[in-house]
Image 1: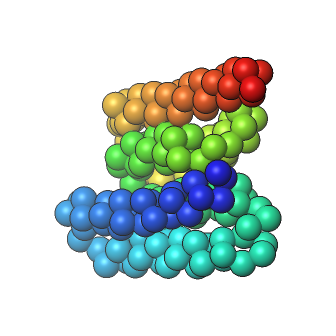
Image 2 (image 1 turned 120 degrees about the vertical axis):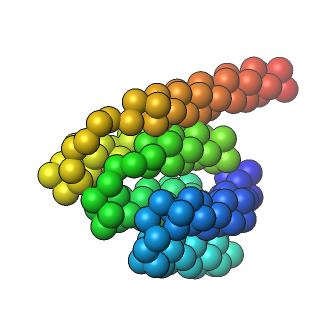
Length: 168
């Protein structure tokens, strides 16, 4: 189940991730932002291919985590390059939510992954690398709600899995 979900996260995530280049282009008009997103999708393709190799079959959670990590890292690169936090909190909220939705990880794995992804947003957002303007409170709310909803979904799935295994 984990291997299949990891592969599906790349199949679903790659086109979704590259589609967000459209609002990036409309906001920044800078080809480097598109190149960052394209490079991330190239990394997703490589990770997807590696899930068919023995190492990918043995460690699908690591590959899923790395895919979402690369998505977060590329958003960091965009924030730093453009010196703008902008609407990226929503992007990180979507990353945490989709991780919990698509990857059947344990609660602890999900908490750790979400903490890493949220931390990756906070590091440049709170650092001197990005100027501090008016905080995007709507985006931060979406980040919190997306992360919380994803973790609640993981908790319910684990609870249901335990009940089903007890009834067998």
